[in-house]
Image (cartoon, rainbow, N blue to C red; front, side):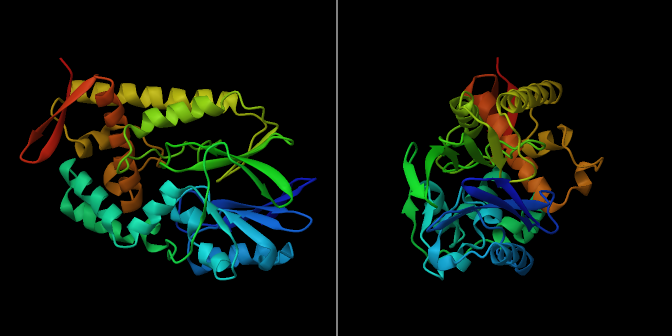
Length: 328
C-alpha cells in the first residue's frame, strides 16, 4: 500500500508488510525531490518485505541511482533491506552508535551480552535457546556497507529539502528522528508511536535507557509539529498529548513493578515479568511467543534499572542470579 502524506515536497508512505509480527507493517517513507530521492527505513531482510518495498518504489518510479537512505535505528525491521540500496551505491545515513552495534552483532557478541544478562536475571536456558528464532536476529542486514555518520542537530540537505537530525536515545542508543523545519514535519521513527508504546530495553554501554527515553521525549515536546510520521501504524497532527500518555504509561508500569516486588521480595526479573500488565489479547505468560517474551523481559529490566538508579529498589546476587527487594 502506498499513501501520499504530504505535497511540496512530495512524501509517500510505503507499508512494508511484517508477517508474523504484532507490529503488522513498517512505514518506509519516500521523499521525491527534483534531483534526488530519500528513503527512510526499509523492512526486514526477507522476501515478503522486499516485495512490498520494491513494489512501492517501482510504483513511485524511484531511480536508486538518484536515491539516498536514512536508517533511523538499528532494528532489523528498519534496516534489514539496506543491502538493496547499498548494492546500487546509494549513500546510507545513520547514527554511528547504532551502526557499530550492527557491526558487533554480526559476530554474535551483542546477542551473547543479552543472553548472559537474561540468564543472570532468572530466564531459564531453555527459554533463551528459543530466541534463536527471533526475527530481529534472523532477518538482520549483512553489514558490508559504509555509512555517512550523522550527529544530533546536524542539518542534512537530501531530496532537495532540509532535514534536521534529532538524536533520541531510549528505544535504542543511537536512534535518530528527522525534522523538516520549514514544513514542521516530524519523522518520529520508533521514538513516538501513536497507538502502541515503543519497547524500551536494556543495552550494552547505555545506563538507564528508560531515563534517557524520558529525556528524549522532553527534548522534542515543544517542537512545532504539523504532522508526525511514525515508524509503525498511523501518524498524528500533534505530539504533546501522546508524549504525556507515554510517560503516564511508564509511570504506571514503574508503580506496578514496585508493588510486585513489595508483594514478592526476592523475585527475579523473570519472575516479575509474568505479573506485569502486557497487551497480548488475553494470552497468559506461558502462551507468549518467544520473541514477545524476550521483549517483555527486556522492558521489565529497563523499569527495574530505572528504579535501581533512583534508589527505590535494591538487588542482591544469590548463586549468580539477581533478586530484587524494596530499598530500606
